[in-house]
Amino acid sequence: MPAMSRLGRLFAIVAWIEAFTWAGLLVGMFLKYVTETTEAGVWLFGRLHGGAFVLFVVVTLIVGVKLRWGWFRTFVALASSIPPLTTLLAEWWLKRSGHLADPADREAAARTTADLQQTQ
Image (tube, rainbow, N blue to C red; front, top):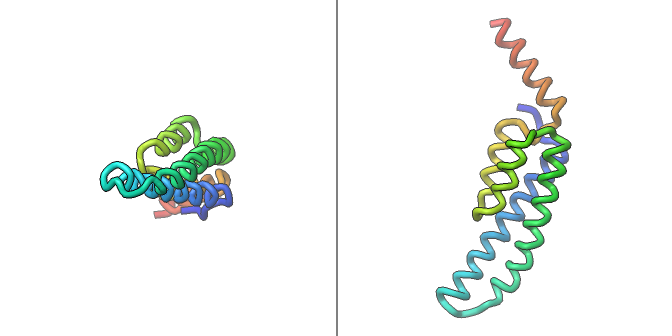
């Protein structure tokens, strides 16, 4: 599996930030609506999550184009920002499939794998 590119690492970091702020917002909503103790969590994490969401969308579009994900991977990554914490699943899937690496590195790894299979 090829190493993550700088853009791939940026995507991974922003995916984790988006998930963290989602978790904070969920805790804030629990405190506000279930325990009725405070609105501070919703006030703080609502703003943080809004910013993280917009940042994730922008970074995903840029990374999707630069790393040549195609429309399906880009759409799945964008859609992962809607349900809570699923940006972590998208990051895991894209990392595991090698799509957070530079396209040239992915192609070189694919050629190496094909060469190894031919020699066996």
